[in-house]
Length: 198
Image (cartoon, rainbow, N blue to C red; front, side, top):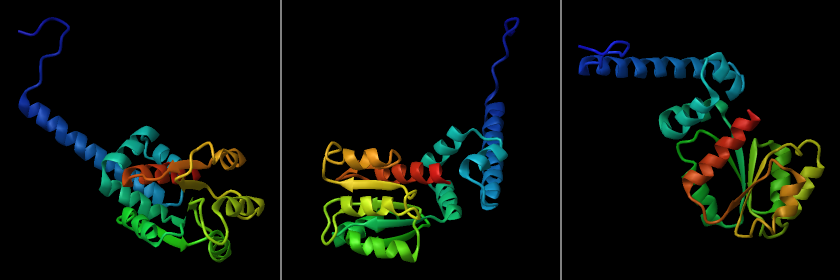
């Protein structure tokens, strides 16, 4: 006999049914979110339209690769990688496999400025120690140009954060990512930036 005021413990069958219902409900909410996102609204607005907490969306994207790939595919982001090392360019491409985004490669600051004029990226991953035009010089030139000033930048470098502080102070949205780093670190930084800009 159950104690007065205390709910009886659920049977295994009831627990199993609750788990299935939770999975179905999550799928329906994800589908509503993706449909709203396809309508061209931001991630934040899509989460509100689907009545899902924004932190829940972030957790799903972090834990569910298939769901995150769908989200990134809809966002269809263009990412410019400014890196003079060919092997590192290939490593970036490998890390971003499965994420449906357009990768634009530039091997120095001068080439990056030229490619900015061809197609504006949603985000730039920038090395500092480059040939021809250094990354910090490119950063300053880009931020002076009104068309490109709002493009978010991830500083990917072996230099310390202190050495990059003047660039970080120029635009507080700029993120510092010290080399070497792993795939998870890179994807998390990109997700945060692209969600903020969406």
